[in-house]
Image 1 (cartoon, rainbow, N blue to C red):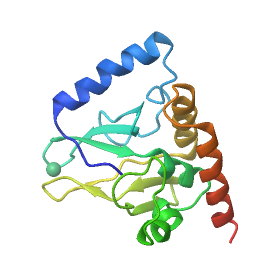
Image 2: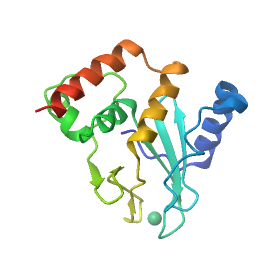
Image 3: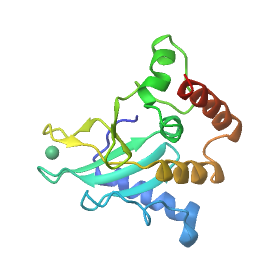
Image 4: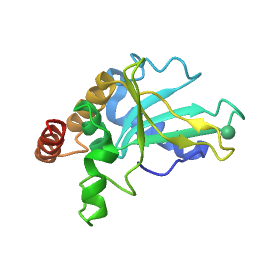
Length: 166
Ligand SMILES: [Zn+2]
């Protein structure tokens, strides 16, 4: 999980660079995003991960939560990213493309979606729901860009599949 970035400038940078990479044929997950319960939520694949921007429901502050690609791989295999990588990170292993501490994620069994346990500065929860289909779509876009190496995606996928089988 990257840092939450709430500055509008940062978001504009992402949108600007995004245009150059994907153009009009963008394999964006924004169009089919099912995160409709969050007003104005947008999900865009970036080099750092799937950037989800939304507004705090309490005070309206713009928020950006970045779900990093290793986290999306764990979600794809139905396991919490924290459970998948937490032990390895605690033992000092470096997980490729995973920056910062392993974030706690939750699972909403009714919606069948995962969410990061993030929060706004005011304390209100920022927990955009991510479906497995959205995680897969973002991973495909990242490999096509290419922002992540297929070999490493395969390695992390095998790791998560093994862990999910336990
Ligand atoms: Zn807030």
